[in-house]
Amino acid sequence: MAKLLSKTTDPKNSPKIPESELILNRDGSVYHLSLHPQDIAPIILTVGDPGRVHLVSQHFDSVDFEMNKREFITHTGHYKGLRLTVISTGMGTDNIEILMNELDALVNIDLKTRVPKESHTSLDIIRLGSSGSLQQDLRLGSHLASEYAVGLDTLMCFYNLPHTELEESVGEALQKVIGLPFTPYIVKGSEKLLARLGGGMVKGNTVTCPGFYAPQGRQLRLPLRYPKFVDELTSFHHHDFWLTNFEMETAGYYALGRLLGHEVLSTNALIANRITNRFSKDPNKVIDSLIKKVLDRLVESA
Image (cartoon, rainbow, N blue to C red; front, side, top):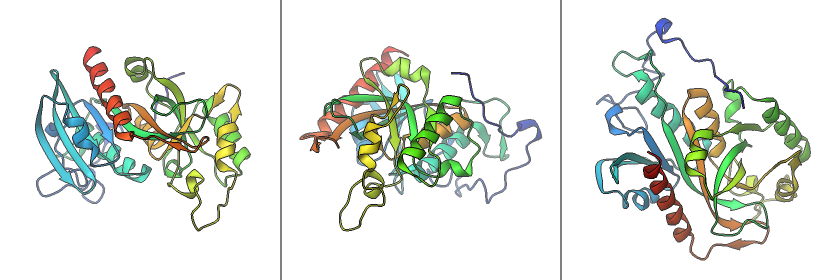
């Protein structure tokens, strides 16, 4: 795929970013994450559940920094000599938008002068998440690396996201099949990180939903607007593009990674199969095995 570059502000001609746009705490840390540039490593591991931060950092040889702010919990330390940061995000692409913008600000904006830096720093950001399978033959307990993300949320309606022809055509086809009032956005993840970490994992195309119940075809007391939603996702094919799993964050990561110039990969522990209606008997074991696999591969490929 040809490299797609988003239009960002030229640092040489950048005005000072106002206090209302780049909000800093009294200690100079970014507003939601409460982090300073020195608090994070070049490799960021992310988890949705704040309780999973410890599941990652318990494998570290040392934890040198901790910060708890709202749902954003951060641990930075070393694993077999490699400096890493793990951050929890909470659920949904709205939280991912906060996370990605504030991580980018830490490395690409001078927080004292409020002006973007002339040299760009690219972070490696790896999501360690859980997900539900959309295909019967994807077994519970599998690990999946998302080659593409399919955004069913509207976050990218507020940004100018460039697409390839393939991505545009898939989005248009999916909108037509489901009957959505908007076109989903499709974004490819980091080829570099996929090659580095994805060996032996299922390569998939992950659907990001803007909720857990109706947006994932679950019905409790409220009727569904799209009652055949899961079946339509499962059977969807556009040439050789098909959908493997769904969750609530990956598309936001991939879109903002493209726009901001960071390498992003979503890895998924498949703990549910929506076609067979089965759920993992030990989801924590599946997730922990994914964590260990990614940690070791980061060290081996460093």
